[in-house]
Length: 162
Image (spheres, rainbow, N blue to C red):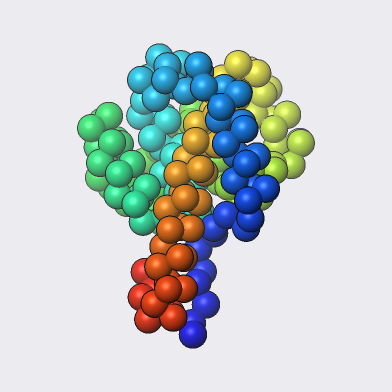
């Protein structure tokens, strides 16, 4: 059986930790998702960046559509889907690189990287960005975990990575 390559939840403890974080910040999520705390196009770029690292096909499709609706070009969306930032606004580049690092480290970024983020954007915006990153991580890992269950139930015959 070929290996399942996408990142999934590794256990119930990881799921609980993500859910606890989301629930503790529940009142902040709606304004974030409605574009009241950070620019919606910026938020979609962040989400596409994390989704590219985690490889969730569901989130990739949904957030590409949302990004288009928020004015992000098709070319930029394709670039973000390849882990590159061609066409992304220069002022967002540090945050996009941070989002990529954040996802690659499974939500445990290097403290110095976070310090640089705070220096660039301030603690309030950094906090909102990290909430967006956490929300897309939850979606990515849930989607990938469901695909993994299907993969296992099919004894590896159904592999979404093929």
